[in-house]
View (cartoon, rainbow, N blue to C red):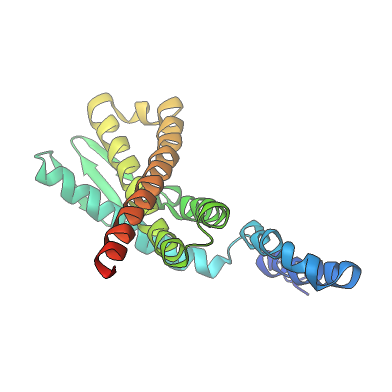
Length: 200
């Protein structure tokens, strides 16, 4: 039914209980418990439903546009905003759906869940706190990317935004987000040690 109705999310999602059931029938509960995480991790291979993407993309685009405009205006740049269109100097820049950061949130959420499972699974509080920080970290990294693109357009023209520089800022987004995730993990470690020291 999901395929007939082009509901890709449900079609891919339905594979998870099928795989789990197959493992259970062929190998029993012991192997299923061992494979529980990799099977459950397949949820990140399911494309997000359209209604979810639409509901999240517009608020993220508006938030990023507002934040970048306010920062650069405070810094003294000739910048204004009309919805998700940023006007800086003689240029008008449209914050597109890809710049909302939603795709980055999905990818980095998968990366964060894997990192927590691989390295922090035995520290439940730390793992949960790190998972909560993934979305704000990703939004901040994307904010830095859009800010960089706006400044590139202002100083070098809109043509400089396309091509290698645009791709480079996308790579830097992930580098910044991953570095921030590691720094957050280190910060949480320090806070937990301080908290445990006070309790002792």
